[in-house]
Length: 352
Image (cartoon, rainbow, N blue to C red):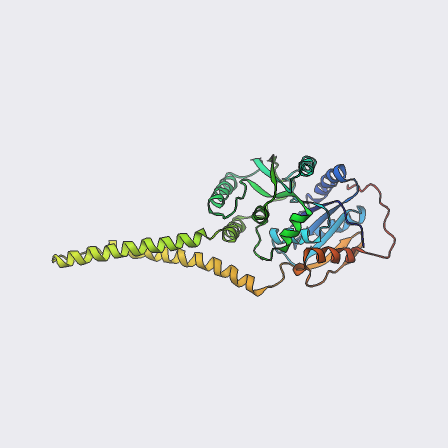
């Protein structure tokens, strides 16, 4: 069995060929500052269509600490992050995006906070450079809505950038849901969680991988994963609609008893349109929850790993890897990384 590192850095990558080398250089430098050579840098290729995997191959051949994980297809940011966490073996695990908007150097500030007893140290954005006004406004609206709707307290203006203890990661991996919202799941776990305020940088290179469609789907996943409030809103809308309808019927009946005929085709059609819209909204809300129940009931694997890479050696993991317990996952990764071949010289792994 290979010796487990002290620190694991997990970075999901999707079409990050332009900035991946710079990310690895900075992340490795930060890791060496706090852990020496006792770290691993896990790069998860989430079905990239550019040269991301080829760059990971090159980096792994040069730096002993680089571990490449290639998914069979694009699974999305949350599941790619989960795949990387599943392959991690460190006692401290840093989850970070590879676009360099979250500075890897903040690890040097996170580690002392954790050594003072924190279970999770998460980055909290005080400023976001390089973002459009629409992205800033929609993100602000999302976090404030989530704060009001969620059944757990999820800190505002935070992403998935965080340092976690191994026990937190193991609990996170034991959660079976497929529609994952990692920052909310970590908040649900509890323990001592400490914020580290920072200013978020603009992307080092490339373009955002979160267009409007993905942002909306992500928001729906977050809200339906941590709140049943939308269902209660649908119930109240139905009750209010029923009350208004009864009031209109009573009003119409009284006018009829008085010998008057209630006219107004336009007002009737407007009322029908409003009630129909409310019904469709309620059906849509219920459909979101039912759709997630259907997906969970299928019990398909969360993600599918094509290969795991260290150096120039690529190894397949068991098909049921994503469904294993956290301990079995670490054992499977250890077995995959074990080799009878002579190890490469452990030189100071510089990335250039």
